[in-house]
Image (tube, rainbow, N blue to C red; front, top):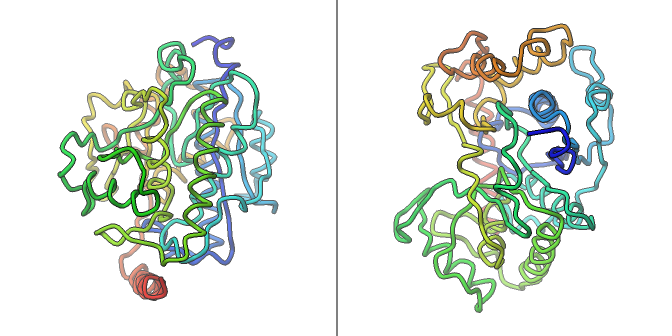
Length: 363
């Protein structure tokens, strides 16, 4: 993709912090909020560092409510990102921050809804590519003309469940449709797709439509006098952003374009070097969502990116994706992470599970 093409594209991620957050985080449950904050700033470094190598002409934007200085290995991370050309936009988490009874897990991911609202305010045809920060770019974003016809909504149908009665995580598409009708009896989709929350793209008009529907449903839900209903697997509507986003994605009339050829959610095991994807196909993607690597490959890659004299910055982009694979086990790990002893994580896990149980009793 040429620089002229990417100059009409915003590549966006977010970082939301709350020192008093008590919602359950499946992967980082044994870290305190200070350590979680540092972990997510490292994700932002790897996200923007890799994207800038492959999409140098794009506009790179970080939305964050974190106003404080962040120093990692004696590097001022905000200044480092700004010097790379990343625009940092301070945005408070307030518009879509729900009452606690509606969420037990990953409440800070709902900050993404505030960001969708902000992106929807623009009045231009710029393509917004909005991703989680633990995504790694390994190729340029595909030619936008293929994916971004006017008003296309580009979303990630991660599970590809054609059978509406097949269970995933203990629920079916039919269950989700019945769940949505508890909030909106006129909800028009019987078997909604459960979309991944790590990727959404579209022009500003699309994001405005998303924002309007999100605002409508958010107000409808939080002013419901009843307790928050739950799915059969005990999930609530604001347990993370995927259920509320899927509610809106399915309802919008926009043509849905699947991002499965662009991005894959990849689970890895640094102890066994196993993963859930065909290694032969992985280098044809643009983005790897390294959902389990926040404490493993990502901080090691962050160290390389923070060193402007490292091989990361000098290697040709034709070879860069293979270099990146060595951090995550494709085909093997050359840069080995430190694996926490399971006994160190046991007591924090018990404490967090107890807190999760109390939160569920309250709601």
